[in-house]
Length: 113
Image 1 (cartoon, rainbow, N blue to C red):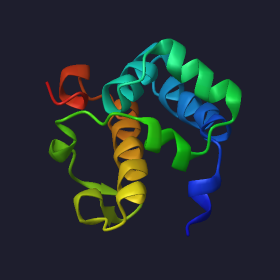
Image 2: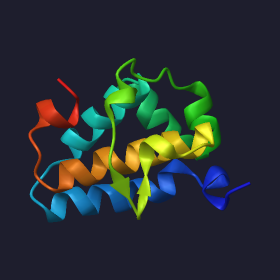
Image 3: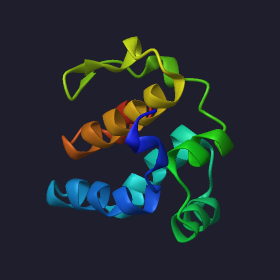
Image 4: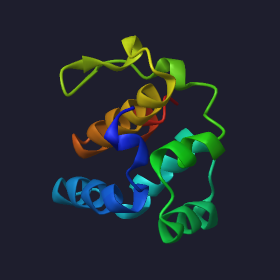
C-alpha cells in the first residue's frame, strides 16, 4: 500500500493552495476543482480537512464526477489514465487537475466543461 493512501488530505491541501496561489489562482478555484472531482460541497470539504481524513477515506466517501474519464495526461511522469490502482488513479486525477489550474488553464477546461 502506498504511503499517500494513509496521508491526511489536510496535510497536502496547504501545498495545493500554495501551488495554485503562486500562479495567481485562488483557494476558491481549488475548492471548486475538488468539488467537481469528488462531489463534496464546501461543508463536506471543510469537515474532511478538519477531521484529518486520509486520502483512502476521502475518496471512499467521494462520488466521483462522471466525466473523470476525460482527465488525461502526465503527472510526475505517469499517465493518469494508465494508473491501475483505482485509489492511486483518483489521487493522480486530483494532482492533474491542480496542475492544470496552476498552469492557468481556463476553469471550463479544467472542469472538462
